[in-house]
Image (tube, rainbow, N blue to C red):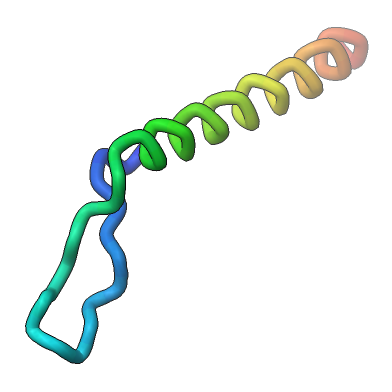
Length: 51
């Protein structure tokens, strides 16, 4: 599951939660997707061989 907004920790000062830069967010989402895809690639051939 990809989070749409990633929040910084709440500061002691009253600034509260601020969403991070969107580009950074997208980058994070992309890397997550890539990891998932790679994992699937790694798993699929092995399972196919077993079955």
